[in-house]
Length: 311
Image (cartoon, rainbow, N blue to C red; front, top):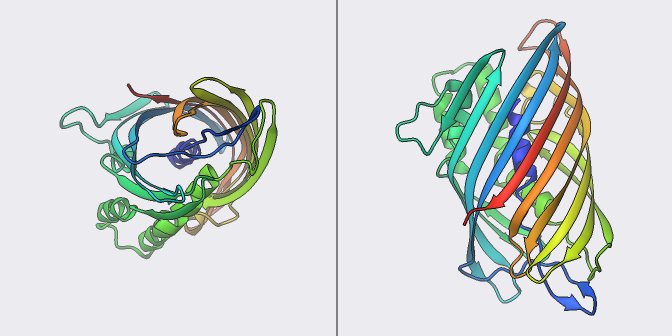
């Protein structure tokens, strides 16, 4: 279920709002300046439970990504060029009494086969451009990651492997990632808001699995240096053969919620800290060509997601 976690990882890459005041109201906008830097730690702790053919399966996983936002340029209209660099990561996975782990900061660390996808993130550099309201107008940088995955799969020249690789390239293309970052960053209210104000955004994204989400945001407080937001989301996933696993005969039907808070710098909009909890419940269906007879497994996933700024 590491792809679900990756999605979860993708869902909390918020580059959120800052600051202009109109009376007692605050206009939530990005206010990046060239040279701004924000190093972040992002950690997810996830417990996935499934029942496969009557047998309970439990996967406990903790992932830590270390990455840095760098503002490379800012246009006159406030549109900012941002580079995101993934410097290190660590993964620990426990299943059926077996534990695997990887820490990229350890010299000559051996990467277990089941964690190689994560290891590919070390050194990844992606670039995007976004407006003060969070509209992503450009995105690039995924070709290196795709090339590493393709190289890993090079020894498997079956038609099935080619189909899977083609699906991965579509899902992790720059265009697909631009769409995903747009749904994450573009949630600013149109007008200034006061503490206690609530607004709602609805987004749909086809990343890993097709997902529809409705998120309710609330301005909790405005402090001297920070803004605190509350958020609560409702998710629906119904891949029905689509998404990255559609060609593999795997579909997912789930629903759930996420709730938490996020503290944001009033100076430029970078995240200072964030903590949220995600709950998902549903079924995963595995069919041909993986198995001859469909397997339907009930599944739940609970994740705690934390972001903190490194000093």
